[in-house]
Amino acid sequence: MISIFQNYGGELLYGLGQTLLCSIIALIFALIIGSGFAIMEVMPNKFARVVAKAYIELFRNIPLLVITMFFYVVIPMYIVEISGFAAGTVGLILYSSAFIAETVRSGIQSVDPGQMEGSRANGLSFWQAMRYIVLPQAFRYVIPPLGNQFINLVKNSSVLAFVAGFDLMYQGNVIASDSLQSMSTYLCVGVLYLILTLPLSYYMRYLEKKLA
Amino acid sequence: MLHLFDMFNVLGAYSWVNIRFLLEGAWVTVVVSVLSIILSYILGLILGVIRYVQIKYVSAIVGFVIDIIRNLPLILIIFFTYFGLPQIGFKPAPIWASVIAMAIFESAMVAEIVRAGIVSIPTGQMEGARANGLSYWQALRFIILPQAVKNMIPAIVSQFISLVKDTSLATIIVLPDLMNHAQIIYGQNTNYTIPMFLALAVMYFIVCYSLSLLSEYLDHRMGQSNSKKAKQAEEVAESAER
Image (cartoon, rainbow over the protein chains, first blue to last red):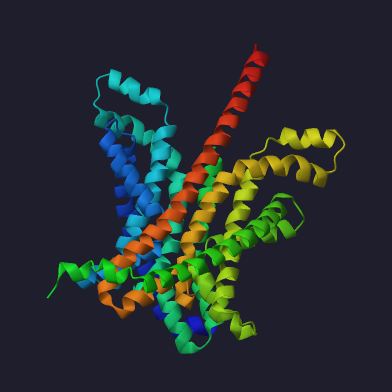
């Protein structure tokens, strides 16, 4: 294992950086899109609710690999040339946003409806009440589940290995076939993934206990 | 020159030969999913209980291993079983490698659900059972676990939904599943790409969405019976306060 780190440290670190970059980009966009659809799901407008529900159910029930391969194979064939990294990140954003939307929606619904009614009665519009009263309270509840979603996102970013996204998993495959030591290579890759996910996972468990 | 007709060449793409080939892949997906579901449910239940009962050293080690497996990507575990294990003399076929990898990964997930399910049972249940003369294991087996399993069924069903979706990742070790067969078809004729992705999306969606409806239904039913109990408990607590 140590010889793998010595000989291929640069490649592994580059892969780690790409994984982290992809996860953070995907997290930011998935949070924005997911929160948007979560708000749409609790809006009084029926059409908005149906659209949000359809989006969430569609992307929650199709494998991430199918979504990613669609962007990697079909989009360059007919529309525009995109790199594997971009295709993987877009797939990851769409897939994760559906899960984040469900998480945020459950957070919004866990806030007492009296909060919304009270702020509407005090003259705030739906959006003002959402923005200043409901969402700040909802986000406090959903921080531990959102953290778990981020861990899932980091793990799921390994799908970039399918589309030549040069992430940690992809570099691991390259190194495994180059060094012919697949077992210790995959152990190294595992250690690097754990450095990203394990501390976060323990911190989220601590937060859950603190909030509960 | 790009023709709309070629892009959506539905008649050619969905010929009987292709459909049959896709269904053969779907069958492999179903077999791998069912085998891994059974294995991971049994293993997960055992591991979850071991983690919950405080056996010296054993529970701590099992807990740590579960945490490690849960925080690794499934693809890595699949690669490890298919390419890593042959180095120590164990060489599984793709189908068994994927079943083993899925079972390891998902049983860690199920174990965590089981542990949370057991923790959510009020401690009074265990104390009452012990006071009535049951041993610790009898109480666990006949009092705690039946209630815990009932509570955690919706979570387990949604875990199995992601298992079905994750079987698609095993195409990377050339498991001849639904995804792999679709790739073979559109690899032979690029005009079939969009119809094949459509077919993939529809087939996975039907399976997963019906499972998620089942999970929602179970959740709803549990919720109803639980909220009734919760209401009764609240009333009892209120009357005790007065």
